[in-house]
Length: 161
Image (cartoon, rainbow, N blue to C red; front, side):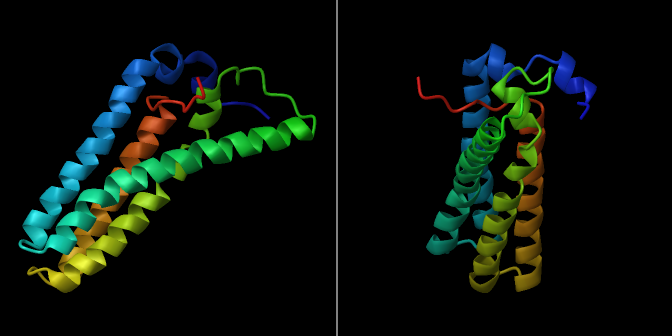
């Protein structure tokens, strides 16, 4: 098994500057809330239910995705350890192992945004399919942004210390 060159040479921000990685994660978290709030004001003005769901959809999806992403990676590492498999030479840090599984950050924003888009489409004023499609596109864009941040090693690693 050979590894892509970027994993062997790049230093991961999560390893070298965890404080900055945490600030990036906080920016994604609060930015997702602001984006959801803006969507609700645009597509379903006056709906308290849509405002609340929209405000929580992307931050909630982000936090659950982070836990799933890191938990799954830890679980796979544990299975490899129990099977006696060694890490490849370039996989010296947890951030490098996480970067390979950053795709786990994509599905939940899409699912959450689609659900809220359906609710907003029913309660909103701009038409069901238009509203649901805009929410879906927002979920896809947010998920891909999270994927890129995770792949680049810009998101923090949860630690017990």
